[in-house]
Length: 173
Length: 308
Image 1: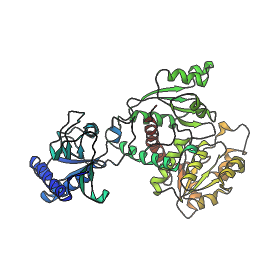
Image 2: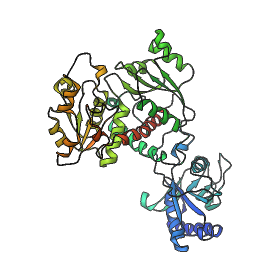
Image 3: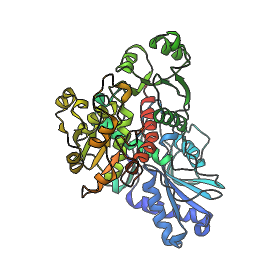
Image 4: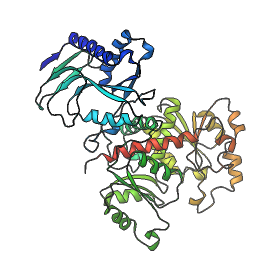
């Protein structure tokens, strides 16, 4: 087991990602933040928390998207659905999707499908804490990356969040 | 995470965990039904046949809508106007349909046990949409979802099931489900419509005085008097049934407490329920119908994923 990011590094990375998102979306005008359920929302909660200190909080539109019903592996494995909560329209908005790990790209593929059922966004960006560069199965890349790592497919990346896993770290198993 | 069964033949075969999984999945599908695009692509590679050997409005429309909302392909079969009228057997009909690459069968039949028979002979997943006087599992599940939404829990809830217990598959499925989920159940109605084999098998309390039953309960699930299944008169007249066991607004208002009224439909207005009760503030009849689509989506979704 190897530690990729420590608690302190995660905090710094979250700060940087928030700033990078803000660079491209000044004051978050016409921008919405969407966290992917269930594990991406821990990261999006933190990023939105950072952002709220940088802009007037009323301008942040933040939703959560569950992609279970849009997965392409329904026949193989059943996942328990979580709540989708997007209390605003995304028509003609800049959307930033936030997830913890980008690996094969299938989750984001499903997320794009799911998102389009809520309207036609102007532009969709992707922000991830960890980009596992090898073994992508779709032509999908992230716009905001915490850390990019090269791994074997036999390895596993685990992101631990305090509120769920009692500690905050990213480890390679 | 998956159901413990391959088919949904009855609540009898489900575990408490199965019921909880179906209800929590249904709650998410209910959310989908509120969106601008009320549809998800989950079952786009699944074909479902709706076999209806018995009349139905709500259940058939509800299943068909659930299938379409899941992006499944659907075929509808009704016994009248089909080769069943020419004498084709159930198994022949189903095997012919399945040879056209159908993955799931939703079936309603007037013979109790018909879906259980099919389950033994065909590979497709079967969902029972009501078999004779046996079970109507998706109705009990949508009733459970409606009660959970209203009260937040099923455990400890006091439910009175009122009316034609003998001929009601809704009653049997509800009793199985409520018992498994830890609710308290009382059955009420005329003695001729409450068979001992049901009350004894489940250890149910029986109440012949409708007023007492209503006074005790949080929810009254009022059943339809099924005249089509009675081959001998079990009470003297509909008018008399209404006077003794019908629920009127006046009766509800005299209870000194608020109770919730459910009915699986179709309602015999002026027999088991008066119109001002069916359409009144205590009734959640239309919520039940709304929840039916979400519950059926959950059942189809959870059964479709099994590997063959």
